[in-house]
Length: 422
Image (cartoon, rainbow, N blue to C red; front, side, top):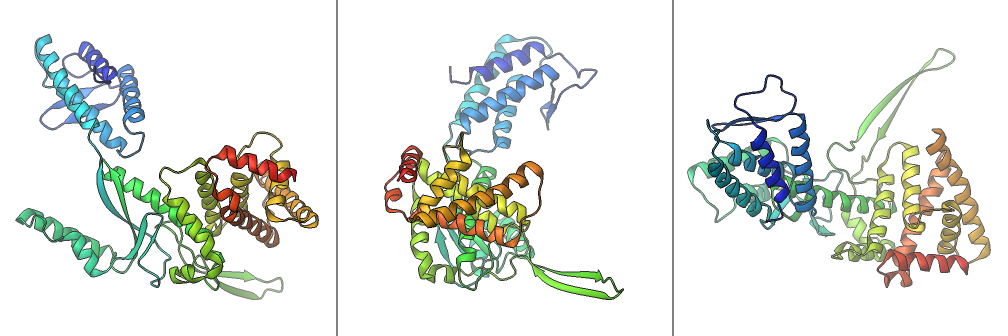
């Protein structure tokens, strides 16, 4: 057996149950291939088909380096190879030969090793200065005419007629899409198909963008942030207003990340260098420790808070960032432990700790109203206070000497508990 006996059993079941011609009522999906015909499934067979597909994904796509579409294509290939061409009379030997061949080919495909893909993911809101920049395995570049041409028409590649024509059409399309001049994240990933490569590259880019946004409002005189296509835009808004006395007013404002985020300022801000260096170290870990995953998760929630235009959602993002890092052992007495641990992280004096506890108590009452009562009463001061506490906690944990030497979440939780008892 190849470990795919459940697929073989499924194909045998289909072979036993399929009849000549199409069923009178189509109750399930059907698959069609040019030159190979069609295969129709009833409800029972359809359920079995998707169960087999889910198991294939679970067993052979754990690293997500192959897409569901490709795995389903492999399964359908095996299905057609074993069951088609249809035969007018039952021939067990012919079916067994086709089944054996189909299973052998399916096993070989699923065992194929991943290859390196280089994907370019658009990232908006990034200034020209400070590029190129490599961060967390992602290289941010400006897509110039030269870079685009090298991408479409690389030296030493096949320059035959059809290939050359295809690449030139690709180059034309990229220019028409307006890629020239845009900042891009150049990401190299190991994958077994292009769809999985693109998904992995976008996920990796999203992670780094979230973390860079954590620092966005910490850069002096640089209120912009980074965003992915479709997530945000700079917009001018006009708001007409009729006054009580019948007069008219018209206010205007710019909304969104209208300035661009400066990578040069990010790198050259002395106060941020220790935190940036520490985050860079965490991102480069392979594999990442459970504590590093906690740090990254908390950073990303706070980074998303920076870019969230709805203040109640921003408030919750910062609350989640604190909870992730201060009470990773969430079970009981969450609010009490959070206040106590945060107070000991941020202050060494009794007065300072009491102030942190009072602030978090007030802010978490607001959090509870948002979550449980649908309250929308977050004022600027509360939002500023929670943002400050979230970022202070994260930077404190990032730079703490004791935490630097820890690897596991359990070590970190034990340390937090000891700190709170001092």
